Amino acid sequence: MSTTKLKISDEEWRTRLSPDRFHILREKGTERPFTGKLLHNKEKGTYHCAGCGLELFSSDSKFGSGSGWPSFFQAVVRDNIRTREDKSFGMVRTEIMCAKCGGHLGHVFDDGPEPTGLRYCVNSLSLEFSPG
Ligand code: FE
Image (cartoon, rainbow, N blue to C red):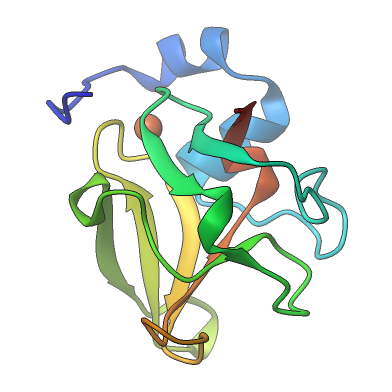
């Protein structure tokens, strides 16, 4: 899938996304931990951006981090995820965003398991799961 950037106004996003998805993806919100419907999903398949459908993670890289959010140690294609330093809430974290639509996904930390040592901590609401 192409990662040509999508330019969509907030007004248009509001018509495409549910209010809770809009809040997370477009306003960089965070769902409450242990509430996301994909947290305990163990099916084989692919996790796509809930904003634009870009492939982001495979079930093969999902692991139980105990954080309360779906966690992955690797992106399907590294370039499908953009990162940015986030200094909000008095912390320095690395925000992760969909490279195509700019939708906020969550954050990436360097305390993940082998082989990458990374932990992509992602809101369920930022993702759409396709089995298979
Ligand atoms: Fe996207």
